Image: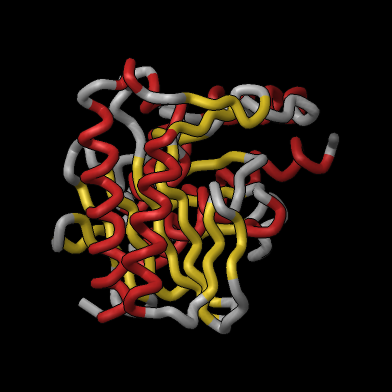
Length: 262
């Protein structure tokens, strides 16, 4: 394992320990509403601080882009961090949440960790060296037909201005696939695409820390990732579609007309 990835894994596990301890007594948590349907807990903040401390101890000159504390510093290297993706799930005791850490060198994502502390599942990837789940190599699914595919998504929950577009897309995707799932943690959904548990995924309104690690996992597992126009600007636009190569093409073909018509 590469030194930068090893450090990211250490940081993710440190955050996971904080999350698991807090999960034993969720009712004792202090919960703040940042905006409509967007919550933050003391666990998010503590986990993020623990991640940053581990990363900065090894790489003090690297920049940070984190969900709770925002951007810190300037560098060719930027760590993109979501300390607890799926906070709403977490505060309800719904065990679908994860720590997400990615490293971007200039414009390229180079390292990725998505850690599910509830299941102790560690997804990792280094650019050019494959994707792994608990040290076992993973690949995207081999399904080739949308009618057989299980697709992940995320419903709009903060900004409802694009709800009509989303519902039209949802209707199209649902009618063409074996099923659609909304588990509530985009980073983990993307990791599931990399592991072949989902055949594809789409969502809009995301932030870079929701997508960065999962996107690299999928690419290193043999899948494809793009924005709704099929371009590489998903981290900037917050609109992402991903999947195994065959399913990706069909999913993108289904999504794009809906996005362009609104």
